[in-house]
Length: 128
Image (cartoon, rainbow, N blue to C red):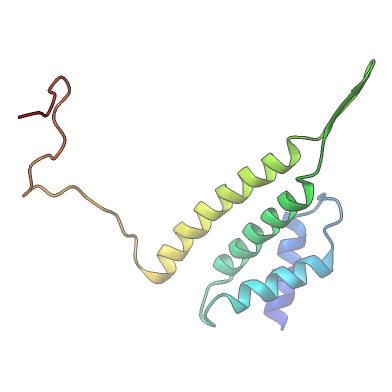
């Protein structure tokens, strides 16, 4: 549990300043992240997973935000959800890279040199 406490504290620091994100949220996310991974997963992998899930939860919660203009006064919170979705996608990419290191499989698809191109070069119609 001492390890969990450190993860919770780190997650709280990373979401510091996010409205309505408290210790209960951090505990829930860390528990979910640990359940989604094997016991030998790195703390960094678990923390990244928790951050991804937290960012998505905040994006869903902020999806109802709005843009309002009344004369000289205006409020624009419409981009809050989009910013959290963007953050979640970036964290997901970082998580995927870290998970690839953990699992040892940085899989990439390469073109086959023993097969010809299947698409016609630019300018050719490809018709017989």
